[in-house]
Length: 279
Image (cartoon, rainbow, N blue to C red):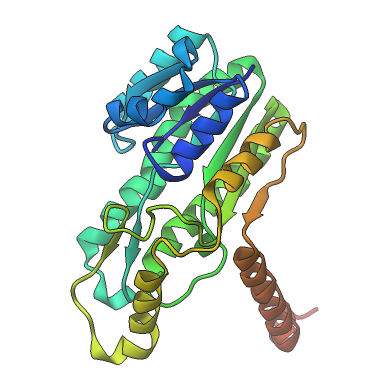
């Protein structure tokens, strides 16, 4: 029996992961700004004492510490941390005001770091654990209208790579999950903010991406329950991957970028290698 701490567990991937973990007999500390919504959503499972809900705004470090302590007091340990809380922002890079950029980083990056720092002493103390950072295909490859959101997820992926190396000798694993389009509420206004300021010069790029995103809402190809099952099943592996791509659309975009990077590297290799001091 593992003990999970999941942020943003009131809906989407967070709720599905909590459901899957509880269904297989694990214990879950499910957090959200409104924990009652989690109790209501998972009432059909009759999980009893295996489910603990806690209020958590990830941007508040003291709340993160309190939620972790509450979980440890109740279950005695935390085996898996799922950093799922976050939201999207849609618009050309130039269109998004500074305050909105900082706000999305506060949740997607600094909030994730708050919770991670709160949990790590528990995992280091036990010399075991698994941190799952929910990123996105946008954390590997940027696209028009998703630049600021991608930047926040690129930040998550960058520090996660380093964190994996730092924690490996201590028995703690780190996995970055990169979902493509899944049929959650992510494209709803409740999870995706769209800048009202549109610059006509970006109509064919960011504007077109914005229209595609709105049209795809609740018509995405990915099944969040299957994605959650894949993540929960991975907790049984002794050597989980650094990155887990989810969805055929994600795999295609990752493959496309890898080919592009390889081709560009080969084309400009002579410039890169000509910058050393002469012998």
